[in-house]
Length: 125
Image (cartoon, rainbow, N blue to C red; front, side, top):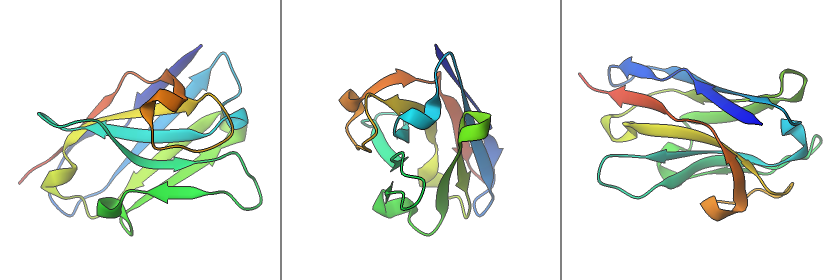
Protein backbone atom coordinates (compact mmCIF):
# COMPACT_ATOMS: atom_id res chain seq x y z
CA UNK A 1 0.00 0.00 0.00
CA UNK A 2 1.52 3.29 -1.07
CA UNK A 3 0.74 6.85 -2.06
CA UNK A 4 3.29 8.48 -4.33
CA UNK A 5 3.17 12.26 -4.57
CA UNK A 6 4.93 14.27 -7.23
CA UNK A 7 4.84 17.56 -9.06
CA UNK A 8 6.41 19.93 -6.58
CA UNK A 9 9.06 22.41 -7.58
CA UNK A 10 10.13 26.02 -7.53
CA UNK A 11 8.05 28.67 -9.21
CA UNK A 12 7.75 32.43 -9.20
CA UNK A 13 4.77 34.15 -7.62
CA UNK A 14 1.81 33.93 -9.94
CA UNK A 15 2.97 30.65 -11.40
CA UNK A 16 1.25 27.28 -11.46
CA UNK A 17 2.02 23.72 -10.45
CA UNK A 18 0.04 20.51 -10.62
CA UNK A 19 0.59 17.99 -7.87
CA UNK A 20 -0.20 14.34 -8.51
CA UNK A 21 -0.73 11.48 -6.11
CA UNK A 22 -0.95 7.90 -7.31
CA UNK A 23 -2.12 5.08 -5.10
CA UNK A 24 -0.98 1.49 -5.29
CA UNK A 25 -2.17 -1.54 -3.40
CA UNK A 26 -5.70 -0.27 -2.79
CA UNK A 27 -8.54 1.51 -4.55
CA UNK A 28 -8.18 5.23 -3.87
CA UNK A 29 -11.71 5.83 -5.12
CA UNK A 30 -13.19 4.01 -2.12
CA UNK A 31 -11.94 6.66 0.29
CA UNK A 32 -11.95 10.39 0.78
CA UNK A 33 -8.66 12.03 -0.13
CA UNK A 34 -6.96 15.22 0.87
CA UNK A 35 -3.94 17.39 0.36
CA UNK A 36 -2.25 18.76 3.46
CA UNK A 37 0.72 21.08 3.66
CA UNK A 38 3.26 22.02 6.25
CA UNK A 39 5.30 25.19 5.99
CA UNK A 40 8.55 25.66 7.91
CA UNK A 41 7.80 26.41 11.54
CA UNK A 42 4.07 25.97 11.11
CA UNK A 43 1.57 23.26 11.88
CA UNK A 44 0.26 20.99 9.18
CA UNK A 45 -2.97 22.23 7.63
CA UNK A 46 -5.59 20.72 5.37
CA UNK A 47 -5.50 22.43 2.00
CA UNK A 48 -8.27 20.58 0.25
CA UNK A 49 -10.24 17.36 0.51
CA UNK A 50 -12.95 15.50 -1.36
CA UNK A 51 -15.28 12.67 -0.51
CA UNK A 52 -16.08 9.65 -2.68
CA UNK A 53 -19.33 10.82 -4.22
CA UNK A 54 -19.35 10.64 -8.00
CA UNK A 55 -22.49 12.69 -8.59
CA UNK A 56 -22.28 15.42 -5.94
CA UNK A 57 -18.80 15.36 -4.46
CA UNK A 58 -18.11 17.42 -1.37
CA UNK A 59 -15.11 19.67 -1.70
CA UNK A 60 -13.28 21.57 0.99
CA UNK A 61 -10.70 24.27 0.39
CA UNK A 62 -8.99 26.25 3.06
CA UNK A 63 -9.82 29.95 2.70
CA UNK A 64 -6.37 31.00 1.59
CA UNK A 65 -6.47 28.82 -1.56
CA UNK A 66 -10.09 29.22 -2.62
CA UNK A 67 -10.32 30.29 -6.24
CA UNK A 68 -6.70 29.36 -6.88
CA UNK A 69 -6.42 25.63 -6.15
CA UNK A 70 -8.52 22.85 -7.64
CA UNK A 71 -8.60 19.29 -6.37
CA UNK A 72 -9.67 16.50 -8.67
CA UNK A 73 -9.61 12.75 -8.67
CA UNK A 74 -9.41 10.15 -11.41
CA UNK A 75 -10.52 6.82 -10.07
CA UNK A 76 -9.58 5.06 -13.30
CA UNK A 77 -6.01 6.22 -12.75
CA UNK A 78 -6.22 5.65 -8.98
CA UNK A 79 -4.99 9.19 -8.61
CA UNK A 80 -5.76 12.57 -7.13
CA UNK A 81 -4.48 15.91 -8.31
CA UNK A 82 -4.08 19.43 -6.97
CA UNK A 83 -3.93 22.16 -9.59
CA UNK A 84 -2.36 25.23 -8.02
CA UNK A 85 -2.62 28.54 -9.83
CA UNK A 86 -1.65 32.09 -8.89
CA UNK A 87 0.84 30.75 -6.41
CA UNK A 88 2.00 33.00 -3.61
CA UNK A 89 5.11 32.88 -1.42
CA UNK A 90 2.90 31.85 1.49
CA UNK A 91 2.00 28.67 -0.40
CA UNK A 92 5.57 27.47 0.12
CA UNK A 93 5.39 24.19 2.00
CA UNK A 94 5.75 20.45 1.78
CA UNK A 95 2.52 19.09 0.37
CA UNK A 96 1.20 15.67 1.35
CA UNK A 97 -1.59 13.63 -0.18
CA UNK A 98 -3.56 11.39 2.14
CA UNK A 99 -6.24 8.76 1.91
CA UNK A 100 -8.93 8.72 4.57
CA UNK A 101 -10.14 5.84 6.71
CA UNK A 102 -13.63 6.29 5.27
CA UNK A 103 -15.58 7.82 2.42
CA UNK A 104 -16.10 11.05 4.36
CA UNK A 105 -13.85 14.01 3.80
CA UNK A 106 -12.21 15.53 6.84
CA UNK A 107 -9.72 18.25 7.64
CA UNK A 108 -8.27 16.29 10.55
CA UNK A 109 -5.09 14.44 9.84
CA UNK A 110 -6.05 11.71 12.28
CA UNK A 111 -8.86 10.68 9.93
CA UNK A 112 -6.35 9.73 7.25
CA UNK A 113 -4.75 6.33 7.10
CA UNK A 114 -2.24 6.47 4.27
CA UNK A 115 0.07 9.35 3.48
CA UNK A 116 2.30 10.18 0.56
CA UNK A 117 5.92 11.08 1.13
CA UNK A 118 5.48 14.80 0.55
CA UNK A 119 6.52 17.03 -2.30
CA UNK A 120 8.12 20.43 -1.79
CA UNK A 121 6.57 23.53 -3.33
CA UNK A 122 8.64 26.70 -3.23
CA UNK A 123 7.21 30.00 -4.42
CA UNK A 124 9.81 32.71 -4.61
CA UNK A 125 10.99 35.47 -6.87
